[in-house]
Length: 345
Picture (cartoon, rainbow, N blue to C red):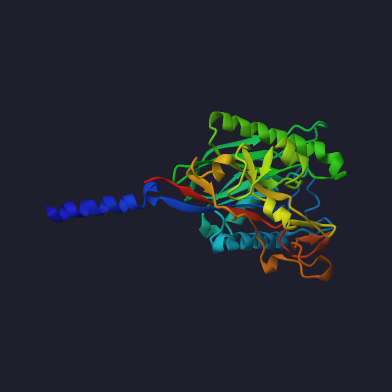
């Protein structure tokens, strides 16, 4: 009888040790990457995707597509000490199927689920999110439409609400704001529209819960000090241990910006267009169990991802240089940040 009772106690204790509440603490890596023209080889009626087809000047074909898949998987698999990020937002994916091909490739063991909503973008590209299915489950998915003054279609803002093993609800917004086509100043109004759309969604969340965990990521086509980020989104510079908590959003990317670092090189100048922004709750440990690990924002780059030719040395190695196939990775470097998810036992 005593033996049977002891066995029951052991089983209960073993089960408790694997429960979310008993787990106590988990360090999570959240990342974003503009994967640059992640197209399949098929033409879609009504969409401007002919550039990436076998008949185009780029001669995009199945072999090159498979190389792209494997190269993206290589980078993702190398993140987070070769464990892959727990959450990764992406820009410039043509279909959900290409993202599924990616997660089913050499990183299949990481058990990623895919979230994607097709945008009205004329090139058929959209943002997407992948996350480890053994660490999160989906609560909700929304695609926020950005209405430009000229009614030109642009990418949706992907809003995914996830629940962690520690019962933290985390709201992820994946962005790819309108480009600077036509000039930075002339196109600024379009990014301002995207920023205001995003800010409106953030305000709705914060009105319901002032301590909501919000992580905003994306290729904003603007830098941390541009009007769309500072004035319209109202994302303030984040400085470890001395942040101004009167602001509801904090941009983790500023230190890299001040150091002259970037994710994209254009006209031999670094641009920090890819950023991660969080809510105040995520940088104040007394307010929430989900917290940014101060100083962990990183521009991820490995030697194999970097151009070595003299003219472009140090730049991200892209898939193409014009129409010349370079068999690279992306013209952007990814960014990542670490968070601690803590649940009281």
